[in-house]
Image (tube, rainbow, N blue to C red; front, top):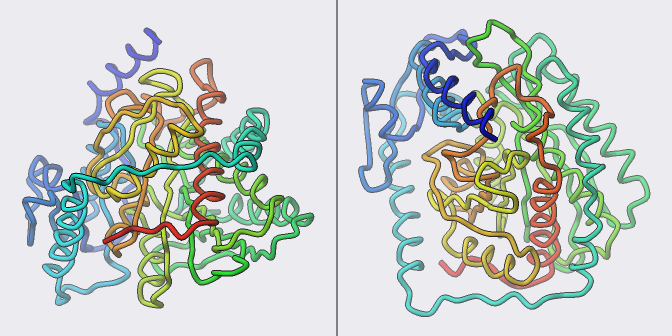
Amino acid sequence: MKTAMMAFLFVASTASAHVAPLENFKHKPILADLSDLRALNIPVMAKDEAVGVGYAVVTPEMQQKIQARAHQVGKCGGFEDLSSEVNFTNDFAGMLKSLAEIKAKNDQYFAAPFRAQAVTKNPEIESAMNEVSEENLKATVTWLSSYPNRYNRSSTPNVHVEEMKKRLEAMLASSKVPYEVSLISHGSTPQKSVRVRLTGSTKPNEIVVLGGHLDSINQSWSGKSDAPGADDNASGSANLVEVLRIVSQKAQPQRSVEFFWYAGEESGLLGSAEIAKSYKQEKKDVVAVLQLDMTLYPGSGEFVVGNMTDFTSSWLRDYFKAMNEAYIHGRIIDDQCGYGCSDHASWHRQGYATLMPFEARMNADNPFIHSSRDVINNDSNFKHSAMYSKIGVVFAMDLANSDARQPY
């Protein structure tokens, strides 16, 4: 751990040399953390101080600076790319107003004097949770991180995506739960997202979503282009595979459960933004969204969870704490990661309830992400990572077999 901390200090001190690949566009609209835009002197066209989000139009060089700053503080992309859904005449102020309204509802719920939730332990769920295999997680992370990179704009952005689809189809062949496996094409990136839908028995139009991004990126000063992304985010992707393996072999859930492996998160939440927007336009009833992004490095201690409180649901955070007390027994520490730190922001902006449990506090996460050094090593802790698959199992089986939903 001492060696890892020294490495973190070295990486942070050379952050100015960390650059993401320079993309080929003239300018694009984004939403980003207001503090990041100000720190980088990027002109803010609209803002909401209470929410802490700003709207800006950036050049490739500006985007690169945002990504470098995000890397410095240990988070992913750090912005949401709006180029696929708006033009420069659209009501960007309306987007900020919507975020402010969502925050006000969350704050109102959080201030309520009686909001305690209870989760009753179910022996079937507890048994399923105990089926999580550390060996399976390691095998999936090893496979995904064996690709030279999973960058969404590489010359072969879908090789691992198509292989993931094949593996999931083979794994689901014995499932008695009705399912669909599909690839989702996007307008903002050539990379595709993977979706698996387990169709609900009695309430199929009510959806519980579990997701994580499948792409990787290299922003390293080393000059190497490899982006194995073992922790970021082969770990969260592996957690989802393991949850699906277990849940798909149980009784058909009442609500539908959908699993996503998103494209292009590192370039501005590209895949998840398009998906969440389309779900909102189609008026799909998404009850809850779980995002798993980095679960392998216990920087704040084994079984310590960084629970992101910004751009997530107050209701789901309460539910998570009740679920943890009943089943998981980890130590939850509330933290924040800023706007656009992962794909939950895409769903949050569309008004859906989201939850983002992270591997550690943000200031104690893996120091080697976005580099060729993000590989399985002595600090990789699959026992710690397995806890996040257990969270996913409970999230899927409990919420998908209940009437619980966000009360606001």
